[in-house]
Structures are given as structure tokens and as C-alpha cells.
Length: 468
Length: 119
Image 1 (cartoon, one colour):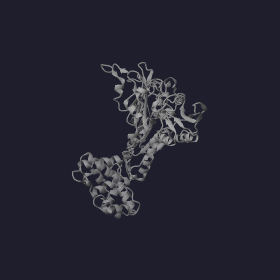
Image 2 (spheres, chains in turn brown, green):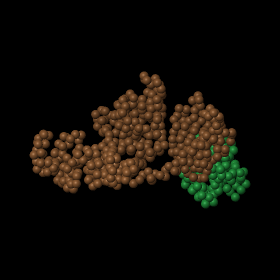
Image 3 (cartoon, one colour):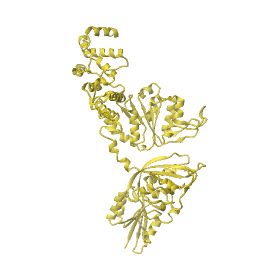
């Protein structure tokens, strides 16, 4: 083995290269342009069993013995402008162990920009893959919780979806957990080591968004004083999550479509494209099919994104999960705020179960966080929940407070509908009257009784709202 | 005594992986280490099990290979086959080293740096 190389100019005195790389706890391999080993660090010596004093000048494939070498060595396709790439593979070490590894490869260029060699990091994945069982606890996947049939179905699909590189479209109402789902897919995929970049397509004006996503060259427009790397390139080897894809302007939809086809990004003001290896996940609360019909969303883009579609159900479609979520958030916030809250009073629990949560899991989470914050006893009472919850339900037949007949009254007669909440009180009250009249078969006496009003009050309110 | 030697190959080299080899070199030597037969066999499937099966059906006595999983190494040993593993270098150098009784597991054979090709 030749004498150790020294690095000059980095510190006041020259430093031995090996001494520097030996401090890195990840396996590191430095190759010449012909992919022969220049040196490797102690971590890789320990992983492969080969000593750097023995293998200097030998081809990388003979020492690393990775599956990648037999398929298609990624270094063969790397030119001086290539970005680092990350691949999962396995190696067989000198102790005859098959070890799953994650290999990151990148070209090293000299000061003239020509390839001087390559650098590879090799991570042992044995310790990282084992905690998978802890990661997927009962009734959950990553940080998403649920035991309803709809959620179970999603949990069953997720590991399969995570393992391939297809585009994913996540739909669902606001607060259902689209962002968390996208992150969970990223974390359980082979791209977990790479970045997870989130871009809100509705948050920026069109011109800024284009530069933000695809980047720009210096001088591309007034104010472009420097080159900018777009989010697509920042997400290299990782996942790009485009939230609120329904708000993406039509002009950018075309550009995104082009990217999804050929995986090449053209920064603003540049004729030269850059190949990027990025998985695209899109999320929206809008109905994209309707937007396509209305001409606000490109049909071909919808087809490209719609490779794998996941729909997150709102809370009203996963009643079984309400209690699970309530208990989960109570435990989380109790321990987070250092409180010893044991649970909810009967009335509080009834109120929490009856409330329809138009803001879905996010609203439920915020409600529990609020109540844990203000609760000073062992049990959270109904009056420690946000006032707007009980106000709506009290008026709706005073069904929330200690009235055990309320649920029966709802289920009796015609099919019980979940209370329909609208944005303002008059509309809500009108809807309540209509619901009561509907369930009583049009009999005003019974409807007034259901609502807890006198007959004259009901008549007056009906007249006020123009109900015949 | 006739000796049959099998070397999984990758280009001009001993294949770095036993389980991923698509070709093998088989040489038959007589008691005086003279070649009776040599041939290269292209495997129908890339599989360590298939390769083990070939080694047994061909009555191979010696295997010279690169990285091999312990499971297959122990199996071949149990079948009384001598395995020299973690050998790096051209397969022609490997067979010469065997004939010269100068080979052992983990050897990095001479001329590897000069003759190595990047397939």
C-alpha cells in the first residue's frame, strides 16, 4: 500500500486522509476514475473484512461484492454533472455474512470540473430494519392510527406502496392526515435516507412557484441574481410531496407532466435539463375529477398522478376510530404536558363521541390538546371541552347533557342522520327544525318535543325561516 | 486421482459473488495436474442453490470462488468439497495457483491490478 495521502489547505498543517476518514462511523470508499480502490475507512474494513493495506488498486466490485455490481454499476452512468445516487443492496463480507446495505455513490470532481474519482458510503442496514415491528404497532402505521375497516385497508396497502416508486395521489378532506400519510410512505420506502420535501402548491403565486419547484438560472428574470436549485433537485433520491395539487396553476401542470414522463427538470432560463431521481406524492382535498370536468385540472396529469390512489376517510366514516383517537391524544398530551389525567367524565365522553368533527382528526387533536391544557383534575369534564362543541349539541335537542334517551330518540323512526353542521347558527337551526320535522313525519307537536321547545316557539321559528 | 475444479467467473475474474454468478469454469485434472478437460458453462438461472446442485451432479471436488454465504460454504464442506473462498483475481491465475498448490481462502492473486476489467 502506498504512503497515506495528505490533505493540505484544510487545516493549518497537512492532515492524513486516512486519519480523517477513519473518524467517520459509516463505511467510506474512495475510488479512482477506473473504479479501483484508492482507500477505505475503518468502518468499511470492519464491514467487509478487507484491510485497506491489502486492497489498494483492486477493483471496487471485488472487495465490496455488492449485488449492484452485477446488475448495473451506477457509477458507469455517472458523468461529472451527475448527482449522488442512493441504492439499497446487499454485500457478502469475508465472514460469509450477507449484509443488507444502503450505498450512496457520487462523483468527485477536480477544480476544473473533471471527474477525479468517486466516493461511496456503505451503511449497514441490519440494525435499521429490525425495529420495523416497533414501527408498525397494533392499530397504527407510522404515526397514523385507526382500526376501522377503511383504515385497516390502507394500512395493508401501505407497505406495498412504500416499496415501489410509483406516483401516489392522496385524497381526503382537510385534517384527515394526508401529509402524515405521505411522510409515512417516505419513511418506510427505500428512499427514507433521502430528503422528504414538501411543497404547498396553493401557497405561492405562479411565477414564484415555478422557480421554487424547478429552480432558475442566474439572470433568468429580473432579480434572479444567483442560480437557484429547485425543490425537485433538493429532493434528489428522496420524495417530493406536492400538497394541494388541485391549486397548481395550469401552466405548471404541463411542466409537472413533462417531469413525470421523463424525470428531467428544466430550470427557468436554462435549456439544459437535469435528470433527477425523485418520487412524487401529491395530495389534495379537492375533487380532481370534477376539476378536470370544469377545465381547471389537466386530465393527463390526473392519469399520471393517479397510479396509486389512497383516500383517507373523514372521521364520520370511521366512527370506530373516534374512541381510539381520543384515548391516543389524551395519553400523548397528558404525558407531554406532565399531567396525570385518567380520562373523561361520562358527559364529556358523550359529547366527544357525538361531535361530528368537520375538521377531522386535526380538530379532534386540537380539542383534546385544549382540554388537557385547561383540566386540573383527574378527569376532563364536559365544560372543559371547547364551548362551541356543547353549544351546537345543546340546542340540538339538548341531547348532550345527562340525557340517556337522546341517542334512542335519534335512532327511532326514520333513518337517523348525523347532525348536519353548517357554518352559521341560523342555517344550523333551520336544519335542526327540518330534521326534527322529518323524523316526526311532519307532526309539529312531536317535532317541538324533540327539539325541547314549546309548540309556539317552533311555529314562530318556522315562520321566521320560511318553512311551510 | 482425477480432480474436478469449479470456478464461478465474472468476465476474466473469479466472480465476486458465488450466488450471483451466471458462468462457471470447470477444469478436470489428472493425478499429475495435467488438464483432461476444460469448459465454461453458462447457467440457466442465477441461483446459489442451482450452482450447488451443479457442483454435486458434476462431482466437483474443489470450488474456488469469491464471496459465498456461510450456509452454502458449510453445505459444500459437509459434502466433502474443498472450498477456497474470498479469492480475488483472474480465474486463470486462480487455477494456476491451485495447480501450483499455492492457493488459500482470501488470496488476492497477482496480476489482478493489471488484468482486471470493468464489466
